[in-house]
Length: 247
Image 1 (cartoon, rainbow, N blue to C red):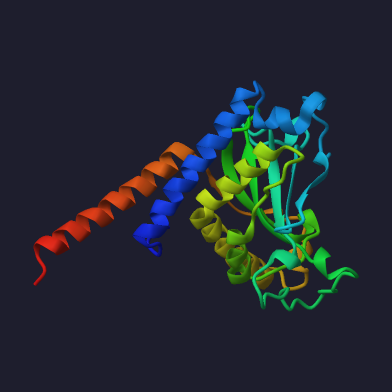
Image 2 (image 1 turned 135 degrees about the horizontal axis):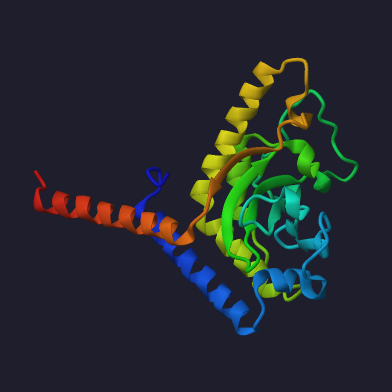
């Protein structure tokens, strides 16, 4: 997962981890968890409702997120709810266009052709424990090919004074920190959807209700950071050997 990253990029991931820790500390100082900030007085929350109401949308970056929860009987073990994260066209890198699917219809407002980046599941205390991609019908998004969606990850940023500023910075740092894993999941998403399309040629794969979560991975942040550190140490070891044996 980290093979394609330079030592500088791996070091940047470490800085993102520090940012995430700082945001988590700021949130903890309030005496409320990420989930408690999002749901407020509505804990334990209403299934399917978006929190905060109306979503969070940053007009500078055109990034957007909301948090919601499924009925308790439908939740995976240890999951309380999850974030859905998006980027709208005005925040996308130049030249990116929706995938040329047969049923694509451009929205009336071009900026409504938003891309779902990743869903982030958390436990009841707001600790992230799973990343997953979803099929198009789940969020009603516009579909973008994997390479284009991956190129959008660096553009996701929620940095506003309100609402929930610390939570916005926290989810921004989390997506930046886990971008290599998210990229792998987005690539797997397209591969699985293509296989699904081949196996079910009579049905529009992107609207098939039998396929909801397309790719997923458990997230243990401590183990993830240990992997980053191990790869950095390996690179330093290789560089050290090269310096000792230049010929």
